Length: 401
Image (cartoon, rainbow, N blue to C red; front, side, top):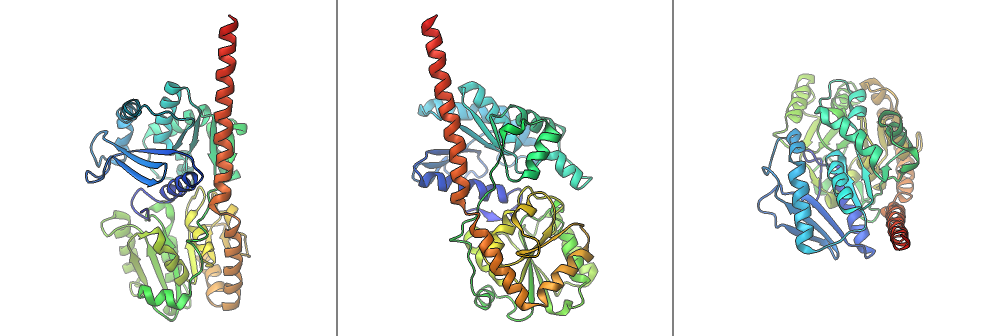
């Protein structure tokens, strides 16, 4: 089960798992190839009927994050060997993130299959959003190559499509805007008091919550500083859900909390399984996402599906989810004072918070996984049909010759 907020995993993992399960429920056969990351895992795990995760050995089990690039040729060879041994065939190659995109390019050329890719985050955008972000030089060049060569690029918002075109030279006609979805059956409102009791949280007072990876790009320090500067601080608890005790960024944030003297009002919680998250979202009065950049913001959408209003940075794809003043607030500048103002409006006005929570749930109902996968299926089927027609046309020309 995917956990929100684990190191180097987050929205992308949730997206892939949900998409694969939805495709499988429609009778589509899906194989997900990934490097082995735990010797105890079997090579093949069946997610659902017709959907598998296939672990392949390629390099050390736990390499340094930036060392994965050097393992791509070996990983590509392992995929080819596995498919050849099984005698399997595919209609479309789908990749996620730039490393997988480079593998997808190689396989697309080898097997003469269409390649559809999604980036989820972009190196150049991260660098501009927060100067000081360090990426290996091969990443930006790789992203540019993939964006220009892929048959289709799936963007999560118009903002991301524009960036792909302007910064990477992608053909706008090949960049399709298909936002992710949310499991509206799993993510639904629970009773707030019952949720707090079951989680052992304070039954009175206001609870603010952040859910996701604990890294500097997420802007969590801004939220911590906001809590420290709130007038009603004695009645507010901040929960930071994600990461692990050993994460350097979490340790740094704990020092910030201690230095600001608010250790009694901030609680760090470990990553949580997806099916447990609705209880957490429902226990909160407001969910806050002060990110420097978000390609979409799945956690914000999950919170909204649970009827919890959201305060978030006006960055990336978040404006495509939130409706300003209706389902929450978008903050145009990343400073604590701006977040304090909007958070205090919500936590001091129960009626407004209730209305926004209802509107948030209604907005989330428009973005279920079924809608997203309908559009993805249309893309996949269209490319597969184009390939068949090209093959038939090529065969006809050869016969005429």
